[in-house]
Length: 74
Image (cartoon, one colour):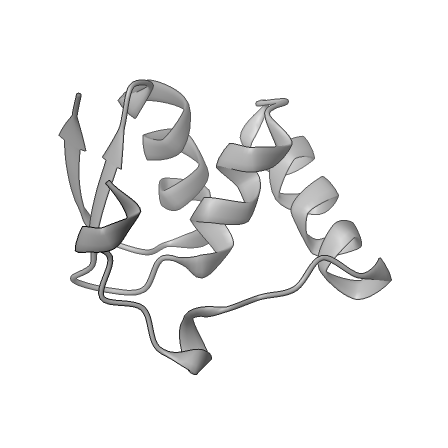
């Protein structure tokens, strides 16, 4: 599945203290708890396509960020 990913260097957000804090704040503000979903939500930009088995939590995270994406459930 990752072979279909069209990622560029700007699509990467390494986990570090600053990003960890941003993820924690996003999880708190959205009322969710999945760190991976939080990281994906920080990476997603307007108009991106996000593929997930949990569109509910990711949708809440993205709504909290104010980012509109195309979410596809797998």
